[in-house]
Image (cartoon, rainbow, N blue to C red; front, side):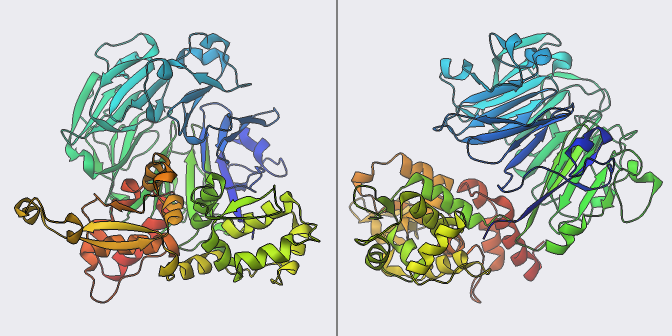
Length: 606
């Protein structure tokens, strides 16, 4: 069943070229004409009339006023990890730690390329600096005419404009063409694409730093003096912070508990507070924020209840619950498009995007399980059998195939690829795409395949994939991997005899290796760096979480839901699961956190 999606926009009326009927009906919420057959992974807006959309693993689409849509494709061995936008530039980070650039020729000084003056939006260009310096880029961020890179795990580099000291390299002003080292032990970086400043978090010590323009008090220092070197933002530990983002005159900070703080100049763009230190925003005091986006003059905040709040907009730009003239100044609840209210539930997540002049709402119906299994299908990792015509066979995972069809591999092989078979490789791939991630394509031929197997076509509108994988969780016989969880406390570990068998001190969680590969970036990286011929069938878990919490996580990998038994401590489980999205590198944070929020609400743990 094809995933539904819907992308709505509002903002300056210059963007009317994006509306389906090209009518002058902005700034109210308007459905975009962007094709939504693929899940939108991320959308970033530049300051001018263009933006970049990331849909497929190595493909991008570029939209610009009065011009045809441009399509870009990175080399097949490169998969996009993240994209960021600056004034009129975009940078793309791939899983291999490489950086790629798109830039307007008039803004080339923002781009770390020796021949950056030749940059155009016509072609993606590789930034070779990091490869030449043997730097692996883990994450990137872009401010106004400035770029920030987290390399080799914790080393911060910066390039671009250093006006107001926004690069944090200890000098005020000037242009830095190639990235320069700032400092180490950095674990997270934050910037707003229209902001002349920068925030980052360090691990040792656990602190939040800021630098750059501070004329309106937007750095949270209780002053209005700009900082050309990183300076500690007091009253916050780095580990408490979910995200920080700056607009032109103010900054917004959200904690992991969902509290929303602001500092800076409130007019004309609004904060609800007028402080030069981060202050809790009164209108959002009782709300738990989960997403934050800022443009040059505007802010969007989404809560865990899918309530959208905005401020800093021109009058009447958004339909609000109450028609207040002060909506420019105070965070005001924004009405969602009717499509969203019709289809929104705990499994369908709103994604918000904002640029200098335009804002987007995206209702994501993506089945996170199917997206993860798509990764597995494309990797062909841990396949244990093949189907197809001799000489043109395709590696597959036996347990997954048999649970989805309720047929054995031999039965499928005989019915589809017997002596009189007319099924070609394209048909086989179409069938396997349904097996792995519920995609229905090549409709007529796929129907023939289903008929040959005596399966009902089309499949039920109910999510058969989730049901089948949930059943697979109960099949211990086909599980081929063990996670060893330490059940000895630290003191007992020190007191053990050296000759004692360490495996006696572990409990096992059994799991399918291919499920771990599909659902966890941590395990995926581990398996990619291990030779399959080594036949590794177990691993020790170093997260120091209880076996109860890990069993709940593994079950989530199969079921997309979190369930507690009567004898489990909900407070302990919630505490231990609070960081698993980041630690185990889960593909979709919103889905997991939605499930965790249900437990918090059930046991009043907010």
